[in-house]
Image: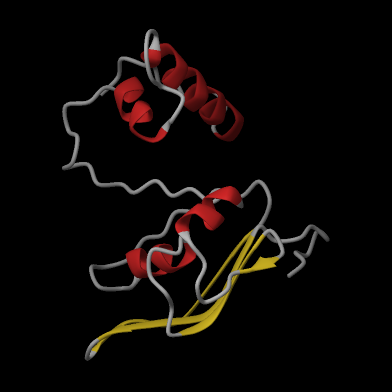
Length: 145
């Protein structure tokens, strides 16, 4: 899919549905993410946010619909590894999981390079660079909780 600015969409999900037994968890959901866009999904419990993300990241197989990442259509048997290779990452806001962690410690949870000596510094550098690009002047520091 091509955006109004002429750029190819990074992610296109169209008509994605998922049922778990008798529960319709997601019904014909659409989501398009353009280059440079940061997206947050909000909604009430049971709205299908997590199910849509799980379908996009190949953690669950949708019952119907189409998912395309960087112009590559996901097959029904797509793996998490394939989706990650296409650059897809999700950050779930689940504050109750790690309430005592500092920002740099939280960053290390998702940064695979943050191992060994000076892991905090590497985790913060990766996160800090992204924050600076997306939210200039954000004011977040490594030691913040």
